[in-house]
Image (tube, rainbow, N blue to C red):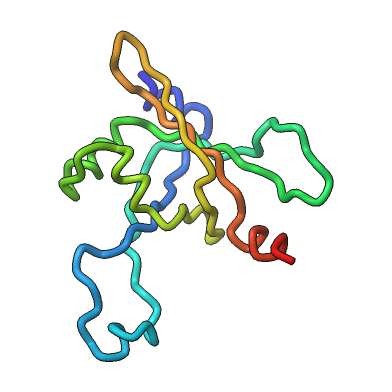
Length: 133
């Protein structure tokens, strides 16, 4: 039911940036010269919107991402993670419409003990760099 509601609300596909299971074994990769290639894990349906948070001067805006629990569970199973928390903990961020976002926090919505929706609070990755003095 959550999938249908997310699709009806204009559901989009987003990508979770996760480090590959095997590292770069070349010399350049071992010393950090080559940037790591992240796996893009597609999560769909999802809804992306600006969060309704009180804005504070000098702080970048926050965004909210609502993701179907069934799509998260598919990725957890495919990558053999122990839980969705482990998947999100291993993520370097989220890619949405060619923009990259950092995960600030996450929560779940559940009914009768079953998770049906993940809510991620996001911040633009370049906004974080601009706020560092």
